[in-house]
Amino acid sequence: MSIAPQINTASRSAGPMPRVAAAASEERIVVLGGVPLRGEVQVSGSKNSSLAILAACLLASRGTCVLHNVPHIADANTMLEMLAELGAHVERDGHTICINAENLTTHVAPDRLVRKMRASFYVAAPLLARLHHAEVPLPGGCVLGARPVNYHTDAFEKMGAAIRVERGAMNAEAHHWRGASIYLEPKNSSVGATVNIMMAGSLAQGTTTIENAAREPEVINLAEFLNKMGAHVSGAGTATITIEGVRELTGAEHSVLPDRIEAGTHLAAAGITGGDVKVHGLSPTHLPIYLDKLREAGLSVTQGDNWIRAESNGPLRATDVTTAPFPGFATDLQTPFVALMCRAEGRSAVEETLYDGRFNCVPELLRMGAAITMVENTAIVRGTVTLSGAEVQAPDLRGGAALVLAGLAAEGRTEVTNVHLIDRGYENLEGKLKSLGAQISRQKK
Image 1 (spheres, rainbow, N blue to C red):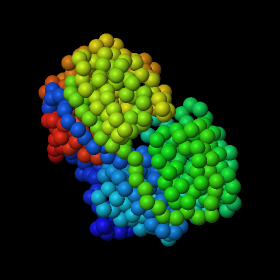
Image 2: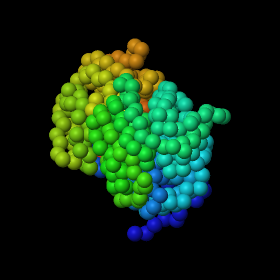
Image 3: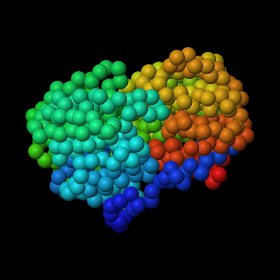
Image 4: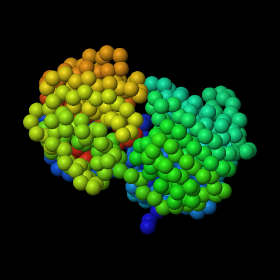
């Protein structure tokens, strides 16, 4: 296997890097709408799974971690840069990453990287578990609304860490790192907190239990990787996860699971354009409620062990949804579904229960002629309107994808700016849509 050069600093490359924000800010995705999408597409590796697993590589005090199916997205490269800054040896060959973290050189996470990506806080648990000291800036809120890290820090304190918040950073020391019983509030079964506690407990003395743990497939994928490294994690995918601490974790080989949000986006693209799209690589069990809602909306949805096909079957029907933790309707697919409902007959209500900033794309959809009324945390969508192409700005990752979908169904030309936000979580979105027949391209300003 040919391996790319080691990453030592921010200026060195982890293989072909996605477009960075400075360059991407001058780019836009241009869509000429009205073409039904048809064909088949392969789903890339999961953004959310890869970020947790990359951070977990810091736990290995011996050996090299070899990860397959890591997507070429901006967030993954930010995490790779973070690992290199902490002293890990990082190499990339295509979608395969090799990480050796035997000789970490610092417990301080760079502020500039944590500010780029909230998931950078995932390095806090491995640093505490390995080095018993972690200084990680607090990510605070984001465009999706406040997402405090108190679940994480409360768990660290229960496990023996002394925590101070100084100059906007968590400074934690844990000379006696021990297991604890952690209860997460039932409102959102925090994926981030579940991930950090699983990593923290893997090298703690004794047993750690997480009650009301997140059940997402990405949590299961991380548990599988930790166990390959020598951890003893059981119960992942249920409400109670148990971690029996071990003295040492070692390198292991593992594959990142396919991205269910990317798959759901392509299936919505089939519906909004009146097309027929088959996505490969994803288990339908990762999108149970979403697929049910696509059927309610009038799409013909068929599936196999690792593929899903969505085919238009007459007019779309208005369908109400409410976001919820897995196995409920994923919040990351809420805005693409809002775009889909703009073309459905009748009125639909899309309720967001997790992030109050998830509707930031609605003003941009209104610019395209959508008929959406906001009532607190619910979007009331009147469908069957004719969408018109316009210049719109991606407000965030998933909102940007929703605007691209709207452009696929709109009359005329749509230009989506701020595409670096889309690049954070979608690998070559415009290229994959083009392979399905979309008239879409990425252009300079």
